Amino acid sequence: MIIKDFHRVLDKRCQLKFVTEDNTSGILTGKDIISIGRIKMQGERGILILNIPKKGNDFLKSETTLKEHDLFYSSSEDITNSALFTLHKKLISSNSVVIDALININGVTNIFFRFHSVHLKFVSSLIAEVSAKLKDFKVNYLGEAEGILDMFRRVAEITNIDYIEATSEIPPEAVDIRKDPIVQILGMGWNRQIRYITDGEISAVFRDRHGLLKVGDPSINEISSAEHIFETKFRNEVVEYISSKAAEIGIPILALPQKLDGRMFSMGFIVPEVSSTEFYSLLFNTFEKFPRWKMFLSFADKVDKPE
Image 1 (cartoon, rainbow, N blue to C red):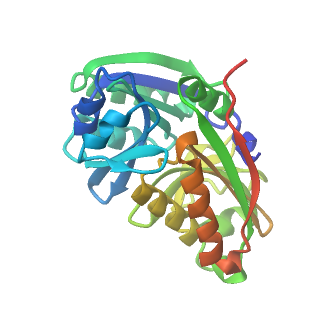
Image 2 (tube, helix red, strand yellow):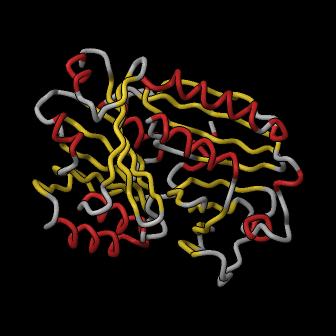
């Protein structure tokens, strides 16, 4: 499991709780329903995608704003002018923040995220700034992060999620040392976790396994030189395709840990259990669409609740 390789790279975690004014949250309020979401960025726009279990919620069939799937309903709503999207933009303005999950519980939004301790004061100031704009705002937790898997085990206490991993052999033409700053800086061995994707540009937190980080390089944003952690942006046709298609279907991907070891590239995905079947279909279609990458399913399991 490559997700373990990112253990405690980000050593702080936070959970915020508040009521939002999006239409889907209004539908779910008081209905004893737990849904998983993510915010898709399209330039300056924000689209809230929610994934709602179908079992036991047949009354949602009458909601015309929801799309029906085999095991879940999904919604896609423009929240560009909302306090929720303002919070999202401010959080990711900190180069180490990774938003792990957006969970809607009976119409109440919970945001789980991790970040590096060097940004604690900055993140705290952001929370203070937006708190007045969010209804029934509460900080459920702000403190030490046990690790990335521990974070998602907390999510698994709330709702069922699966971890899926695919591995590929990067085609030579996909790695151009003359144009790729990541390869120039780190060579062919690193770990990263995706922070966000917008207009084809991907932001990620990297851990340099071999200590090759060049402090002051204009293409990177240093997080911790001592720990060889930094943020930078890049493009990847496979990652962009999977993320875009998942959003179209209504499947929120909660984590995107990735690892490069030589030419072997591994990608991890955490998705709601109710949408795993459709995600597998998307993943296998991706294998066929990008044959040069020689992708294959390398690991799959549910995320266990804490013992």
